[in-house]
Length: 90
Image (cartoon, rainbow, N blue to C red):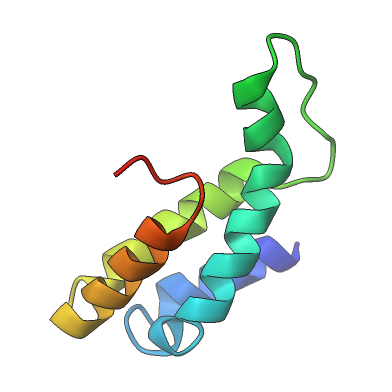
């Protein structure tokens, strides 16, 4: 429920409040996604953990990236965060 409300807030005022919480949100979202994504990528058979909104978090990551497109400085912040994560294969 909290994830859906957060996504609604991002989509409702795209580009304004989203950018203010971008750095904190990206770190939390990435950690949440990693709960299922990392084991899934490293093991042949893995059962997704219930209650972890992996898909919703990935959608929010996309929403934040799209909201950042309005300003070059915001795009650079997003790219710097993305390239600094362990999962990046850039």
